[in-house]
Amino acid sequence: MSRRALAVGTLTGLALLGVGVAVLTPWHPLGVDVSVRPDVASAFTPTEVQRAAAFRTGLGVWPYVALMLSVAVPWVVFAVLLRRRDRSAPTAPPRRAWPVVVATAVVVLALQWLVGLPSGIHSEQVLRDYHLSTQTWAGWLRDEAVGWTMNAALTALGLLVVWWVVRRAPRRWPWLLAAGAAVVTVLGSVLYPLVVEPAYNHFTPLPDSALTRSISALAARDGIAHVRVVVSDASARTTGENAHVSGLGSTRWVVLDDTTLARARQDPAAVLAVVAHEFGHVKAQDVLVGTLLGAVGAATGVLALGWLLTGPRGRRWLEPRATGRRSVARGTALLLAVVATAPWLGAPVTNLVSRHLEARADAHSLDLTRDIPAFERMQHDLAVTNLSRLEPTWWQTALFATHPDPAWRIAQARAWERLHH
Image 1 (cartoon, rainbow, N blue to C red):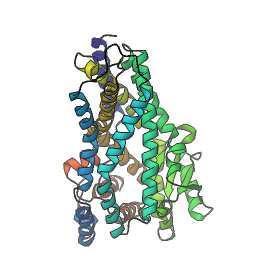
Image 2: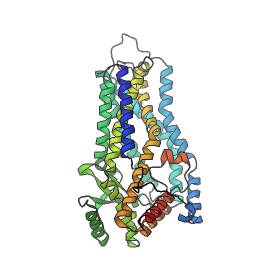
Image 3: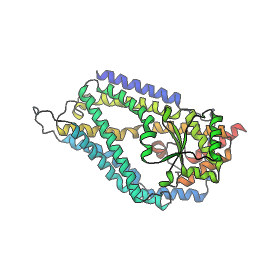
Image 4: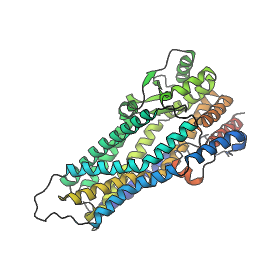
């Protein structure tokens, strides 16, 4: 198909994505346009603010440097391979491409891991210094190995499929891969609780207790009595507290960290506020919303990439009929570079949508429990326990903040109270 068709497809995808974001994002989480005025000083003590700031100072710039190096690695490999010509003779018999694809992926991913290793070690030590990490170094290395192996296997498999499609359909591959990217995005959401999460944590049903009965009553009152709530063994790695929703359809569940569940002994109302927040995600189908937007975004990104790579210069970067080792490695490195870069280009938009979804889930928690003090205690204590960033800069919010900052969430709760009293 022509590049014009790819351009039209890309613009159509961007338009659909824009409409989807505009329509599906809850721009007014409280239902009306109300002023939310966060005040860190009124939500946290000076000691709490100083400790959170000291923790972030301890982490330093290492995580940002590691991130930039990780993104740069595949681009550097691609640039090096681009400067060198393939020595294969034009009449040389075709070689099997798959060993080169796998080898290139393994080398690039290994280099990315190595450039991030000093930062990872430093960050883990800081987490230990602040008593946030409960892991042994052997356990930390085990998690690193599991994560790298899983990532390498899935990446290599994905690249092999991409090359197979590109070779079999040199004119239609952008459309086929765009459809494939959308399907993989949906499958990823469905399979995440079945494949990825069990690789790191062990999950058990909620134990029979007064809290469990309160959660069941809360779900029934919310009209989602069918939802599955489980507990993860987060305490094997951290003292931090969290909860989340993952999965779609029959794989969907609400996960409470056991560290969060332990809080119920002192403050069950705060834990119910956490659960009610997660029920808000379930009730609004937020995972499905994020998945659909992600599927459209992935497909649009592939079409845009296809438009670039089917041009005169792009064909030199990714040659569908390439047989030489260097040509195949160069195309593979380019694909890895795009995969490493694309999420950060879209991060300001995806994080903006995510923060509004989280704010709506907070509003749902308040609507369901109508317990302002418990909600504020929950937000305050989670931020203090997890040493959350209390005063993020604009660029930290844009690139990294999937949730509103704690002071904003507490301020929204107070705005909710003003609306309802």
